[in-house]
Each structure stands twice: as structure tokens, then as C-alpha cells.
Length: 221
Image 1 (cartoon, rainbow, N blue to C red):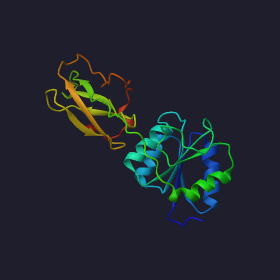
Image 2: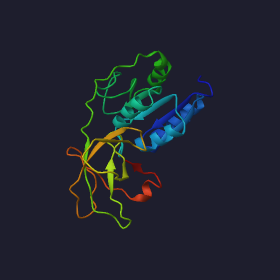
Image 3: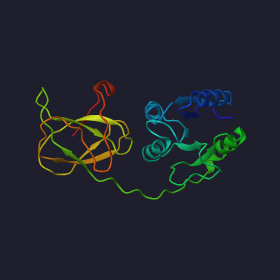
Image 4: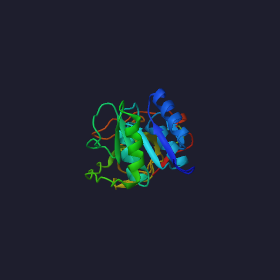
């Protein structure tokens, strides 16, 4: 039985999975928290780092694939278990940054064996990922306050936040995502646009988000 300091974070978009696993592992002595997707899981991790993360892979918004990759990079001490009904067997699926894999629908005993063996498992090395190309941001027209704001999407966690542009020239700039801490490189295209446009990448769409979603948090160049 785990001691009182060992915490488990369960991430799944299905409430029945979160509730049933939470009851089971709480009875076994774990301190259990749950999250419904990758974004809310990162918020929970920032509040308190769990010992183990058990995450579904297929979720709306931020998937388990993306969440596990962020956790591997930003919180390497967390032991991670991926779970899914789309893969079979006990091997971690290719491209998944997890220490172990649990097939949904298989026996609870197999999951308990994974948890028991987790501290002794060797962490599988992942193939290095090529760093995304710097974002190219076109300088928009000024807003009512005379500032040229844009929205920028983190290529790591895919969350969008406002960015207040500062400075001139097309030199390479760097900021950190306020949500996952990922280092984002970008350049400015000095050809101003007549109206405010979102920042964009040539290979990834950017979704607009309302200011209320981010409160007072902003990315500052």
C-alpha cells in the first residue's frame, strides 16, 4: 500500500473512468486527483506534482499524446502510464512518451502490476524531435490603446494567448509559454496589416481565444 505522500493524477475525458479509478485507488491508499483533459491536467500538475500520472491518449482538446510529451520534458520526475482502448498488448505504443501502457478494458490486476513495477522500470528513450521552425508573425495595425497585439499558439501544448509585440526588425526573438513553459521562437514581419490578425505558422492553424480565457496572464516579448 502506498504511503500518504504518494499521489496519483488520473486524466480521462470519460467521467465514469475518472470516478471508478478514483474510488479504487483511494481505497488502496493513494491520494487521487483527476482531470478531464490535458489542459486541466497541466493545471493540476502546476498546483502539486504527482508521483504517477495515468492518462488516456484520445481526448478532445489537448490529447494524452501531447500531455505526456509535455510532462516528459517539463516534469521528468513524474512516472507516467498511458492508457487506451485503441492499442492492444502491454508495450508502450510507438511515439508515446510514457513509462508504461495499460490497455483499457483489461483486468485491473494488470494495472496494479504496472503500478507496482513502475519504480523499477527503465525509462525508454524517445527519438529526438525536430524543433519547430520559428513562428512568423506579421505586425498588425494598432488597437485602441496604440499597442499592436496578436494571438500566438504554443507549438508544444497548443494553447493560445495574447502577445504584446515589442521592438522592431526581423531578428529572432524568444518567449516562454505561460502555460507549459515551452520556449517559443518567433520573428516579426514588419509589413503591417491593416487590421488585427492572429499569429500563424505555415504548418499549423491558430485558433482565436477570448481574453477571459487567460485572465491577466500574457506572453510578453
